[in-house]
Length: 320
Image (tube, rainbow, N blue to C red):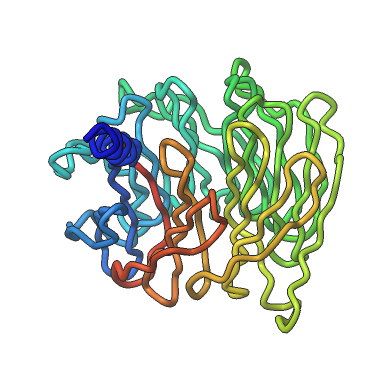
């Protein structure tokens, strides 16, 4: 009897350890937002959100989703519970990527056509600054300590270090051709940047702004032109980083301490972007041309599920 009771308690504890979250994915060609239950591994519903949605982020209090609807030339504000559009932000023309600061009161938008970064006050819903950067800015991120905004200019092949207080460029770093995405480690000490055309990942020291390591991805049986690194995430303990490799249909797993590429995980076709579950037990990938997301179990380092979501999944955000 005691053994059975103990087994029941262990089973209940195990069930309680599975955190239920909601995954939101932008569908570029469906003009919609997909809502996914990752624990059940199923698409719950899709809701219209605007023309050509791509970049997406969730507010720090998890109340609102921000969605860049490129062909509407705005960023929609969506209630994360009701999924109703409750407002919009003046993003400038053709917004694709943007980044929220840690407190959620500033949003930084890449304006690719204008070579600008637009700074938006989310409370007033007004643009407060435009910063001239290099040609075709796309990747953008804010450091967790809110010291830096990094804008990656694809044609200039440069990372721009923007001071959040002065909202001015303090420094520039030349990197490999077509830098596509940037992300900081949780301690704000390192910046990781992918270069789509070079097939590389560059890791920089955030204090010196110097390059620490450049990693070239090589996959047996996959030609170099298919290896196009894009989205990046790094776990909070800086143990592993994960890099989406575009039409190589792989996610690279990088040891974040030694910078060794440990393995490549086969996912859907043309993997764009990545997001962790809140407990960082799972990783979600958007696979643009197979119209699905992959769910990766990070303990076993294996892809466990593929969920069809709609046409051209691009951005992904997770609500606890």
